[in-house]
Length: 116
Image 1 (spheres, rainbow, N blue to C red):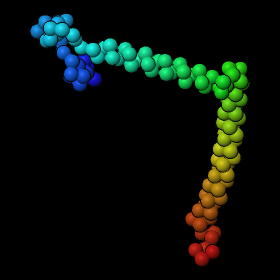
Image 2 (cartoon, one colour):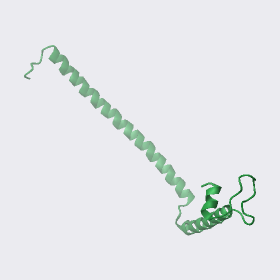
Image 3 (cartoon, one colour):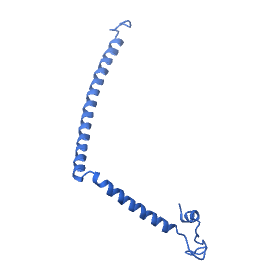
Image 4 (tube, rainbow, N blue to C red):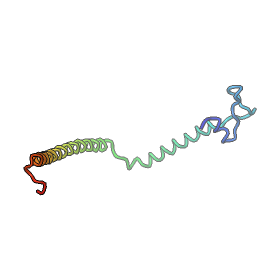
């Protein structure tokens, strides 16, 4: 929301477009920046309160580091296991392709009848 829209929403005076820094009302001005600052301060206070309440339940830094190390090790192990499975499956596929090629060659050489 821009400053004009926020001033209009609050029913406050808006800066006069002809003269910069002046308002179209003789007294007062746009209070939107003040309200935004107050809102930000309230949110900051609320965030600090919530952080204070959650602090006893947070994970210690050294534990978090250890858990991250374990997660990274598990990632490496799972990648290695997946790579091994992929290699095994590719080997199986290659064996099947060789069998199919032998069958096709035999059929084309008419060693195998259509009925067989």
